[in-house]
Length: 345
View 1 (cartoon, one colour):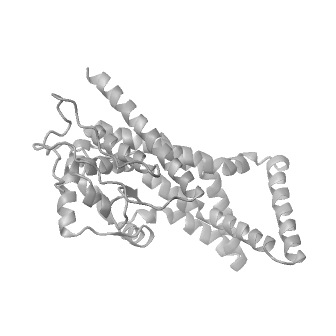
View 2: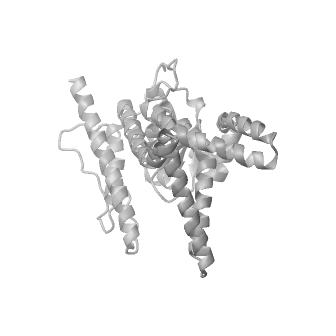
View 3: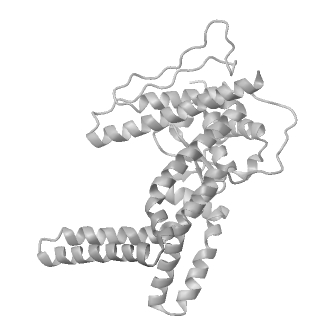
């Protein structure tokens, strides 16, 4: 496949003075996780105090100060390799990515050296923004997507970085980790107790459950700490909604850079492939006499969807959720494009 269909801008490049910020979705994500962070702080202080009373002060302070370390380049590289399974691009991949990334950052007015490009060994058409300076694209996307669509998904990930979504999510996850680990440990203990074959284990599980419920009731209604308990209970739903808002904002950012039609093609293919048994996607050619957005080549068809075995009930629900997400993003992209067109008329 010939990937080179991206119109290359030349000439002087204007770099913005402010390279990134924090939008409403990123700020809200941080605020939503503040109560969970307070519980994490209490967990760290309690565990360290059980080892040594002196550590009950030192360890929590050190843990609070450790958050920004995840944005150090060396730590980010370790996270990319160990946690996300990424690798550095090969020389051939790097040459192609440099051409596409230069055009994306040129349109955005962003210093291209601020971010590092990585490759994910995954068989899906996707890209990822991680930590504070990492933008990764899957090898499958490198092989299958032409440069226009590759630029569109890279522009989307750049939108996450510019909006502060990635560093806000990384900090939120780091400071929520002790609380979540403690919650999972308690749930695992309850599951283990209720799975025992004797009445003693089941009785202990019931007593522990009643103790937790009583503790939550006292904290919420007696101690008046509803402002801590209720946000923690609602946090998963709020974070899921904020993730969706962040996706919409990153899509709007890519549209603002001029990659709206290419992003629309990517999302249309994603929405169709997400439905089990759907026919392969091929973009509709432009009408006669119309000028395509990227005139060097016609839109190449997306690769046919791989043959898959019939999905189990859970798989159908997952595919339906992915289809809904893709369609919601597609509607948002078309809305932003229509608003952009009205402003330019």
